[in-house]
Image 1 (spheres, each protein chain N blue to C red):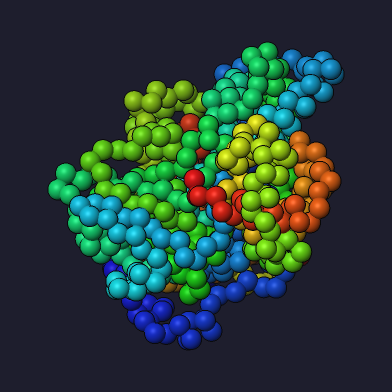
Image 2 (cartoon, rainbow over the protein chains, first blue to last red):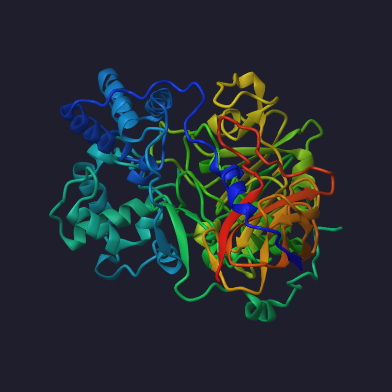
Length: 207
Length: 374
């Protein structure tokens, strides 16, 4: 057991390692805030180009320089983000203005541990059991392939669907198909069609 | 000190006993959701006061999220010959259980300045568990190791959202793969691996960061060269020499990130806590990927005076021990506790870690500010 000497600790707190100053030495000047129309366009581009793969939280937790945002957008274009040259520039400027180095820290939410595990767990198929895979192949080709690719391995703006946990969460699939999500518009389809598409997706060889 | 201890926690055939020993988090336990999907979830610091992190609150991280749950998946192992093994097939090999730290290379990235892009982890992308499986060396021996092999390439079943996005892949040296602590594991804390943690099989590579602990293990291939691909040639690299904070580092001056540097983290008091007067303690965990922990020093006056903390648990490379320092505050007021560890090779936790372009391996002295009530 040791006894404490004084309240000198308070003064030292300011120099503890985790309280380093934000902002890079010699970091480029903060980008000029885009005009409101550009901000709206930037937000739309972020949803379209980034939202295919990333949650909004992936953007909002970053606090980067304009140069870092430009580099990130360039990297993601190389990985498949669909952006024209002018749009990429606009998006990078939007992100730099929205999530700059001196932005306030984004709050990080808590999640119930049991709920997080349950989000990946298989569900009962219920009304979506025993779908007709041949019908599913045809329905997928017209309904889903334009975005997810004809082989369901991911295209624009639909991500890969093969060998994913959601294929065993039929209730979730039905909810997403009928309510839409992100850029995916709601689709009015029957239980047998959803069951058929799920059945077909489950037959696909693992990539 | 041997890291592999078959009788350590789980003996062969002791599954019934083991299930009663599975560490549990309290009902309603929380994780910190850095990303909801694919899940990047951090362990709250309060759990870093014990040797084993309960699985429910063990941090979760991957680039692309898991594949579908399928306990019958096999791992394709390729050397002179080839073998496709399921969990059941691995019963032919000797079962081993080890206790080891799993830590994401990017743990603590949010604390680095200048900031770098990536998941902005605080301290919660780490945990310690018991891992049960078979030695990778035993399986590689079965397929035969070509004499010119230098690398072991590994891939999981997880796939990126688009074909244009690079697949996740990693590699380790043959020497590291043959280390007796490197496992193909199928149980974590005595239970079959959950999907989030790599079911049905994952690698366990104590002392190396999580990117080497390939989840949803699909292929293990002996090779005579490094693999090609972003996730080996570009990602998980660290400067070969100290660099100016914020500098762009040419690829030729980057090397694979390597082992986890020595680190200690305070679980209690929590930063911002208010403590009752009287006897209290600073508690946390310390580990190093290079050697067992030699000592942890703790200050409760912001770094003016240091005392050696006691250490609980079995020492080992890549394994954490719990440190404790009891103290009694002389009066009410605000205090700052700081911890710093030194490993058995003399590596000391730095007050300020070296900056690096990907924000890996943050291991600054950890400090917490707390108040003692009148």
